[in-house]
Image (cartoon, rainbow, N blue to C red; front, side, top):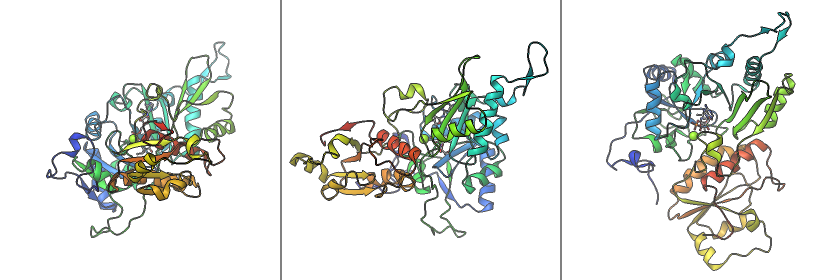
Length: 423
Ligand code: TXA
Ligand code: MG
């Protein structure tokens, strides 16, 4: 089932008729193109652009009609909130309620000593985290100021902001002059895009401009390099106080390149260690994921091919043998491996790709979404297998946070289904 650019769109609406004309178009990353793209954003229309994590589908964050166009194009449920992209920390603080409240209060005795309120602590935590990790792959979620359109927040009252480091993303934000709301530029539930062509494959039938840095001045395809070098989405961290007298909490809602430990270290270093705890609310598997973090449903990032995680118990068993039936399944299976865990299946499989044979998690993260999309295009593929990654098996790569993110993507690609016997 080798898919061409015209027919790889997922979802009924996007697939359309085979002969339906594409509406999306590529633009280059020249100053002139980005200036026009900025005008397009300001006027309420959609532009897809690379960030250091994945491609985003951008719109004017403060224009609810523009935001609804993003939900429509992605076929994304309105219960899944969007991240607002800004260049400067101050542009985000304007969007958060805590940052707009009084900066200090006298205590009840009228004493001049400063009583630090929770909202000041929250503001301080947001500032120190943004100072340390921005621009970069950390999204900070906090109580929203009243003028934020509720559609962006999925009515949660909390708004997510991040400042991307990718130069094209930054130039586009500057050119538009407004905050840009941008989910990953894939159809809802499909694999996130890390190249312009991935976006065209998913959103080709939508009214979207796609910034393609591979285009030179003449519009020729000249470079083939990755533009999203982190390769997996930002870490999402929510900063809040659950009760007026309680501790502050930073909840990790999605694993990305920034780890929970780095976040805790930053808070401690800035004197906030006694006021905040850092908790990991995300489970890489688990039924209740969607209740914990909006938009984090278990089936996510899926290739359009049945997918399974092979259990660690099975593949790590040294006296393991594969039955004749399992070998037959392997003949139509693509294997996406990490650090050679499924190496013994390589020769039997239809196709095999290792995200990083030496377990380098930076390389693996940069490859994972491209590999998931590739698996759909292999002729004759009927199933995709991934290794179940068991975290404490001494195979952890060089960046624990990214290994967790990779584990999360593979688990979701397989809808959390772990098998002992190949099927
Ligand atoms: O790296 C990234 O974050 C990319 C690039 C384009 O910046 N964006 C991205 O957006 O991954 P998206 O829409 O695919 O994922 C956003 C996720 C939501 O699904 C949700 O889990 C979390 O961020 N999120 C956003 N707003 C939130 C909110 N108000 N409360 C809780 N979680 C929120
Ligand atoms: Mg996404």
